[in-house]
Amino acid sequence: MCEEDHPIPSNGASGFRQDFRMKALTDKLKSSKEEKAETEICRRHPEFNLDYYCTDLRCEMAICKICKVCWTSEHQNHVVIPVGGNCGPGKSELRTCKDLLSANIKEINTTKETIAKSTDEVNGRVLRKFKKSHEILDTFKDKFMKAIEQRREKEMDKLESELAS
Image 1 (spheres, rainbow, N blue to C red):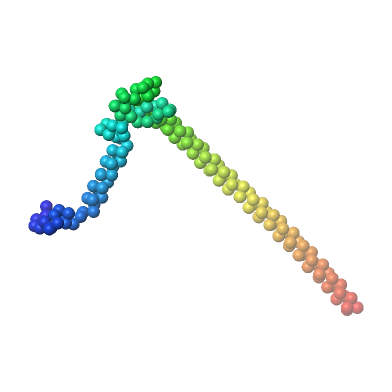
Image 2 (image 1 turned 90 degrees about the vertical axis):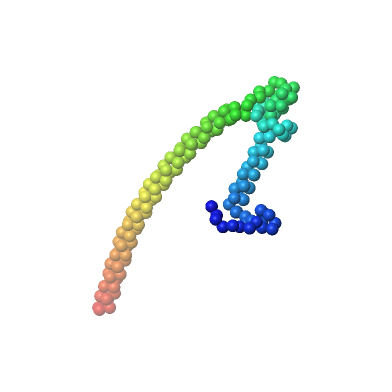
């Protein structure tokens, strides 16, 4: 504990230096209580929580125990269930969708890997064929250049023999 005496400021406790961590925590708690109050309190009967859910497609709304009683004429043929019971069917549907998506993702990743492998193989074949074609062209070039050189030498020899005679 702090063993120093601190005088109380003239404007009271509000004059003490503010601890920003405590203020942030207090603000967060206050806002979460307000959010909870907004979502869990009945608009028609603010003193009651929204404990029930009307599953009829025309309603699909949360209601309190008073609304459940006084709206019986409105909800006469509707199925009204406790709020905790509402998430069962949706939860299993979400789980099924998640499983399907996971399977699709695995299939897509497998396909992606297969495409990457086949692309690498195709690139390798193209490069090998290109190198082979390049080698063939180099061979033809060498033969062609040699034939040109031989013909040039032959023509030069012929010209030299004509000039010498």
